[in-house]
Amino acid sequence: MEYLDYDIYNINVISTDTILLSSSYNNKTAFMNAKGEVWKTMDLSPMLQNDGYKYIIYPSANSGGMQSGSSSLIFNLAWRGYMHADTIPRMDEYERLVDWYNNVFNTFYFFEVSNIYDDLITGTFRIKGLYKNWYNIPFAFIEPPFYRIINNKIFVFTTYSDNFLIFDASTFELIRKVKLSSDYTKIGIEPIPLEEESFSNLQEITNQKARKVGYTEDILYDEKSKRYFVMQHHENTNRFRSHQFSIIILDENFEKTVEIPFKEGKIKNWSPIKTDRGLMFCSNSNTDNEDDPKIFYIINF
Image 1 (cartoon, one colour):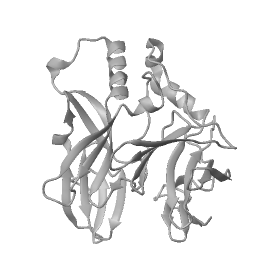
Image 2 (cartoon, rainbow, N blue to C red):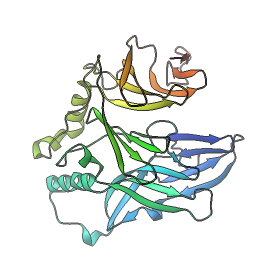
Image 3 (cartoon, rainbow, N blue to C red):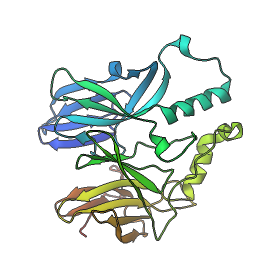
Image 4 (cartoon, rainbow, N blue to C red):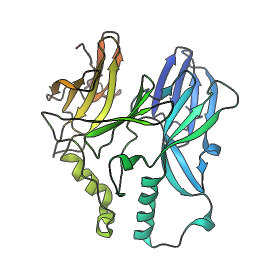
């Protein structure tokens, strides 16, 4: 915890001897065993510079989902600016923001860390201009790092579209674009244009848009039944994060077979853990409130 500055954003359990704890702001990952002993740490900061730009890494917004193959991890990249002060153009505030989102639109989206068990790790920038798979021009994109690796494929889903992308985790080539539909919610926020009047209250405009549509938060896969389980938020005009969601079940060809809604709000933590018995949800993400204790639900489809 101290090494990660007390910031744990993702826990990726590879085995009882290899539990990866990743933070979201300091480019660090720690390897721990089931006894809580840290046996390896990684600080990727020195590697996160490319072509005059600097980046920061973010692990997946959901637990696990970052391991590629037996010895690689894939992190989301956030563009953080120019490497050297003398390369920064002179700009007013609006020009600076437009420059920022133009770079977000054109720069790399993933960082692959290979040979994670060796003393000498390697890092490679992957998938340049990801948003060009959804849009022809840049917008003000603000969202969590939603992605998951399943069977050597990277599933990337965005709050700005009802389509998710599937990339080969070895070649990073785009394999497929899959369109989602829901019987209970609209999907996908209309992106905000790079216009001066939008930047005065960008976060609030984004929040208002997000209340009016649903978005995909996670995708899980069941090897036995060859089915994909999509965690799909519902629109809710009363609050930013709704406790109403659906599980959209897709077959192995990504055809929708059924959609199961959860509208009562009993489950407040909607990113489940896949177990041998089914999908395990939690009633409350708060671990300290004695008046509202955690209740775990296992749902088997």
